Image 1: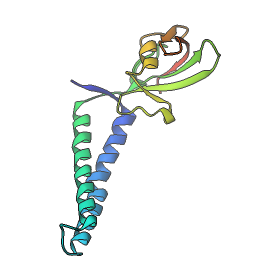
Image 2 (image 1 turned 90 degrees about the horizontal axis):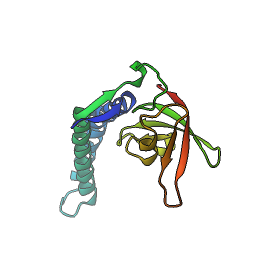
Image 3 (image 1 turned 60 degrees about the vertical axis):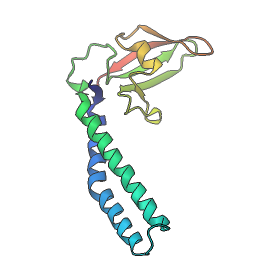
Image 4 (image 1 turned 120 degrees about the vertical axis):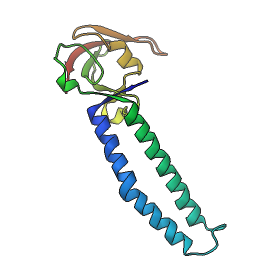
Length: 157
């Protein structure tokens, strides 16, 4: 099953993969070699830490390669703008009760980063607005009551 991913997300993963396969792998190899010089490996904490870091790095490399192999990379800049909220779109929402405005880019699950205003396509907010257009209202069911958002602007950046 393919996983949707933005071009930006795929590029970031490729950069991380390159870093892990080159410079980080070399650093870990040097750390293991240096730790071996200290003698008895059974009780050498530096050696065990470096080996553990190496194992984590190799696991992450495999995970990234798997994600990229399964990715369906979607470039929203090549889609005709029609004010419809789709995967990869940047959407400006207005909370109906307060008038507060929020802006999110709807991305793949592994790309989501709330600090960067990137929300997963599987998040409640994204699910409430996907497929809707400017002027439509999406409703998020929350523990303290439903929250309604009006779609103010949709951008394909």
